[in-house]
Length: 236
Ligand SMILES: O=C(CO)[C@@H](O)[C@H](O)COP(=O)(O)O
Image (cartoon, rainbow, N blue to C red; front, side, top):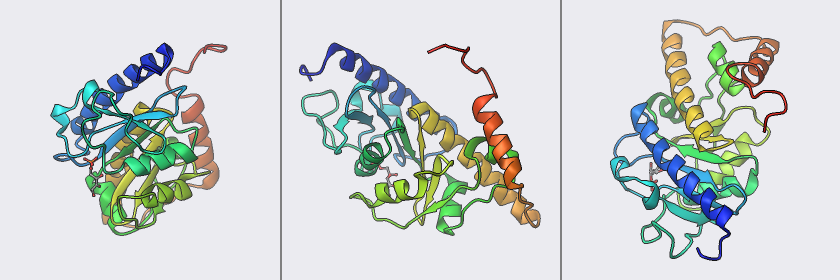
């Protein structure tokens, strides 16, 4: 740890704080039960990321209990939390970071409605403007993969690389989301569960009405580049 520059050590501390606080958001939005699910955040300027320890209750997580890992998924020894095993999805998160350099955060949950679509291996069709805004189209399904090696990570990357969606429904397992940072990935997980529930309920009432592709493009462009408080021109 002492070999890391002061700048990287500051960055690590900031990611630890963010990722610890964001785990509470998964509980707040009802996306996880018991110790299911996990969040990681890439450390800017270093080949490192921070992830949840495996099987630890959300109320027992704090910045120092998270685990610092290399992009190979190896725990950095003699760092806070390194006495515990990292999340069982560490290999998947690491694979995403190695193969999608633009990704700064990864989230996994078993949120109910999104996982139900994953159990049917059915993509969520883009039939509400909230999906067009947030995901730019349908939510795709990724392959069935057993936890423990690069299989899940490879399935996430093969499905999402070049895709506008920041969410993938891993078949028979549940959702993984990505983002420019951990908070963006958590937002994708929250919005995914919301649209998964809405579209599920809508389909129970009758046939779904798709949105025209050109309308999806326009909605996605607006939401990503106009909606909310955009940075002032020239701001960093
Ligand atoms: O999906 C699974 C197990 O099937 C895991 O992702 C658990 O949901 C969380 O595992 P840890 O992060 O606590 O190891």
